[in-house]
Structure formats: C-alpha cells, structure tokens
Length: 142
Image (cartoon, rainbow, N blue to C red; front, side, top):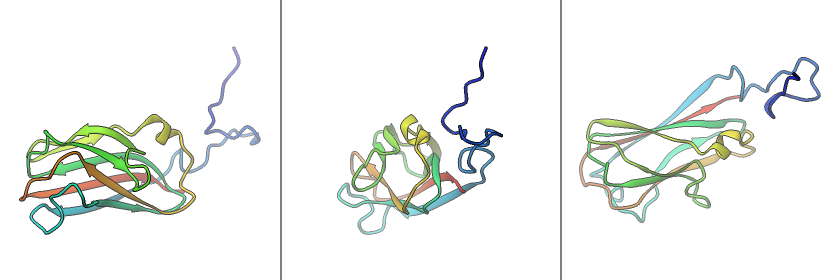
C-alpha cells in the first residue's frame, strides 16, 4: 500500500516536511474584550473587531465568552467582505460561559494569510446592554 501525503506536505521536499504554519507550529491568541454597555457595542449595525491577524498566520480556532446570556443570538466570524469566512452561524454562550465555534474546513485547509486581516464578529440580533464579551482568535504562526 502506497503512502499518501496530504497537501500540507511538500511533494518536492525529499524529507516530506510540512511548513511551520501547519505542523508543529506555535499558536498565538488574539483577544479583544467588549463592554456591552459601551456606546455602539449593543447594536447589529456596528462591527466588533475581535482580532487583527498578521500575514503568515493561519486561523485555526475561535472562542467566544460572555458574562451575559447570548445563547439566543447567532454569530458569524469573518471579514467585512466575507462575514462568515471562518465560522457560519453558531449560537452564543450562556451567561458565564464559553463557546468554541467550529472553523469551516475550507478555512482550516487554506494557506496562511498573505496580508493582515481584521476578523469581525457579526451578531444576528442586538446584544444586551450590560456585560462583558470576549472574543479569542487562535492562529498558528510561521
């Protein structure tokens, strides 16, 4: 039976080594915190920027934590031009909880970013007027 190397391993490298962003890579956490009572945070027309990820990084995980109950609100994770690039609709956390949102397989399989990227969280409804919201994007570095 022949061995099959996935696309992460170089076909031209005799040692079949994978690049650092996909194999044995360090991971960085990009965290941003929002006070839900602050002006502009609670509506659906504003865009909470949860991370600014640098070029050369590959997004692999996302967590959303909140002191308020957001379980009735769906969120997407992506960019301004592609709001669900990383995560399609997922339910927010209960009060005092954390949700680890599923990153889309095509985003996990994508190459590392060629340019820096602002990652936004888009709610399906208005957020509560009180509490703390914390978004954490995890990306492997080169």
